Amino acid sequence: MMTHTTLAQLRSLKLDGFAAALEEQLAQPGASALAFEERLALLIDRELLWRNDRKLARLLQRARLKYPHATIEDLDARPGRGIDRKQVTSLALSDWITTGHTVLIGGPTGVGKTWLACALAQYACRRGHSVAYLRVPRLAEELRILHGSGGFGKWLLQMAKTDLIVLDDWAVAPLDAVTRNDLLELIDDRGSSRGLLITSQLPVEHWHGWIGDSTIADAILDRLMHRIHRITLAGDSLRKSAQKTSTTSSGSHTA
Image (cartoon, rainbow, N blue to C red; front, side, top):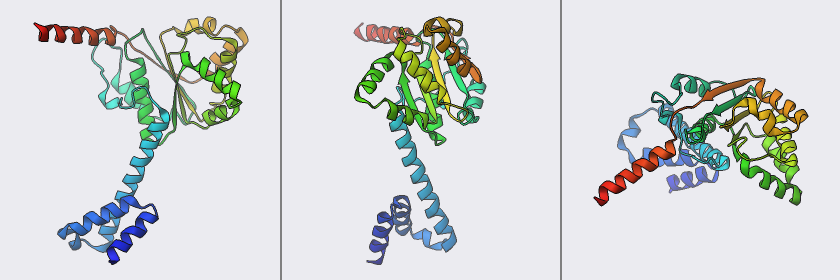
């Protein structure tokens, strides 16, 4: 009866990891041979692991990454892709987010820019950082809705508090005047303690023309290029390779 009461009290205190570990200890005859301090240390360690897992799950859910299961450990760094595994790992382990740096992943369509961005963002979540994934071509419509509903200010404040923002497919679609101004606000709020990750197939030298307004373009580029890390992917489209493999397998099966 006392054990049931203790477990219920632990769960009421939201110490679910501690409670689960205690139940396991009670079910293991050998656990009683451990000293009290050792058993307590194991219980506390389990609670910390449980909280970290819950926090990671929340961060990933809020990030809404296109590829939430992408990880840097699964990075495809075979020759010809332009990926230096050592560079990516070093970047992931650095403090680029908390020092307000920008990571630019460039290269032609289909080479895995978005996947790599999601892998870096997923690792950022594992390090406890909040992340927001935004597709730039869809952003214009989302911002129009926010302005119309009066929620833009609240959204901008929320983004300003987010440790890392991923801007995927930068410069794919034309940029209108309102979105151009909103992007400047979004980027300006990054400051020196929030990170930015951009994927784009358009070379940087053409960004000024894409942005359109020369004054705003100068302001955006000045902020983005100040502290930037570049990763340029190469090779054939992974989508075409996957489609070709799928078609071959289907043909072989039919034959």
